[in-house]
Image (tube, rainbow, N blue to C red; front, side, top):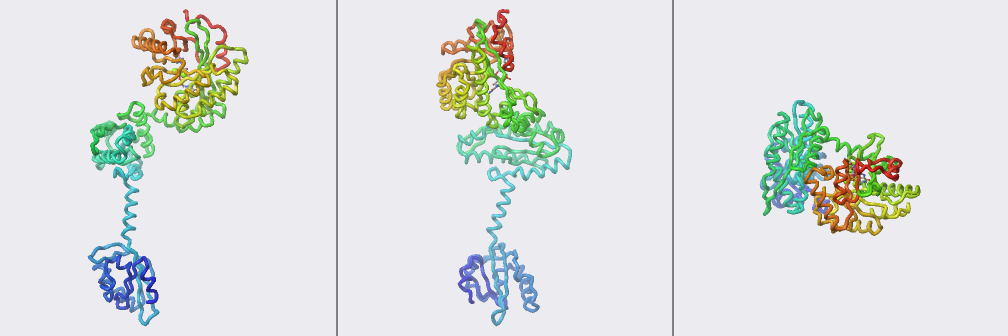
Length: 556
Ligand code: C2E
Ligand code: MG
Ligand code: MG
């Protein structure tokens, strides 16, 4: 044969047969694929060697017909067939046969490619498209079309149960990812044990699962969700660890909560989100308000990005007074957003959204600048001896750059730094002690005053105060509310004042609404008072009126 070298080194198996169907050439690739040695098969009929027994007759007839009539169904085409190896093992091949008439008699060359590996990979890809690698459960994308059919076509009742494992990344962190995967697999198996013709289970994402129940009613769906919560609360044994899990579960159902799979899923997720805020480890059924949060995030988010540039933000100012001589000591600036589409949005609603989007450093920088601009305006108008407090969100403290924004604003408006108070919230100060200490140190070095806001509501103990160089504590309004009658609130307030005195800190009380509260706080030695009794927050032009001597409201 002229192309022996090529045939010898070809990657495809090449088998040449003569007009009697006998093997004349069998290259090394063919030896590998069919597991015959060339010497063993040369001269044998090809049908006997590589064609599975049940196709041999058909092969012979087709071959004979071709030699007689010249007609062929296989020549020069790519075919996928089953072949057989030495030992009888069958496998898929891709085959192309060409005829050559250059010699005295025709001969045929078959190019054969083993497709086993290719097929195996295809099957694996198809498997992974369908099943989650870790849990072995079907993926949500596979369940969803079925869910859509059930919900959209079938009508009737269907429930979507969204299962979110609580603090799972913490588990991964403590026992390692490999063991974490084992736990997820075990969770998957427990959930899968619930599957039947009415209940389908799938993996949604990392530590989230979706269970769909068809038929039944809302009580049954919540019952199933509670059952799942119990099922997952039993310990998981992985290696030498005993892992205890809890799950937060949201439930929604059709038709009441939606008629599309997507709506039901989103609503079950929203319900689970509320469960998380309620402290996790619980089952929550969807309520319309659950969507508020999520819609806020989506709709407000986009609008908040431009709000600062579009002049939609404003600062209002709430006055603070000396508890003893009722002198105005300054103002707390409170951010107000008037959105063209939402109207007036309270800060408790939009600030968490802005935090979530990472917009607080930018918005906070605007607040600081605006407060400094206002201080300058008041100074220029001849007012003196007051401070303005700005609230700083946890995110502003976590990221570098706050002190720079403050320093720039102070400089730009030539504001004496001690006129600016920074109000920090307690809860996140301990999260990143080193970072926060550095940032607070830098603010302190500028000369600004530091106040710890909402004091008493955080999780930390009083002793951690010594980690920070603070000037003032602000007693949270929830304690002030109960004064003077609630013994508990009174003793908390007393304790805070005693600690503050020991540490040489000033104390301001917020949310003072009654004269009794004011009198009680003054008696205990609280330095400053703030609250509706003394003045609500108002735009600067209105707040300005507090600079004039105020009535003896406190004595009444
Ligand atoms: P906060 O810093 O503790 O502010 C005090 C809140 O209590 C203000 O609500 C104020 O209007 C309200 N308040 C004042 N006196 C009384 C009273 O006598 N009774 C009652 N019931 N409430 C009183 P506001 O303005 O809705 O602000 C809520 C929270 O939003 C603030 O709590 C603060 O955490 C946050 N916030 C406001 N402005 C900003 C800001 O510029 N930046 C950041 N990061 N947070 C801000
Ligand atoms: Mg505040
Ligand atoms: Mg407060």
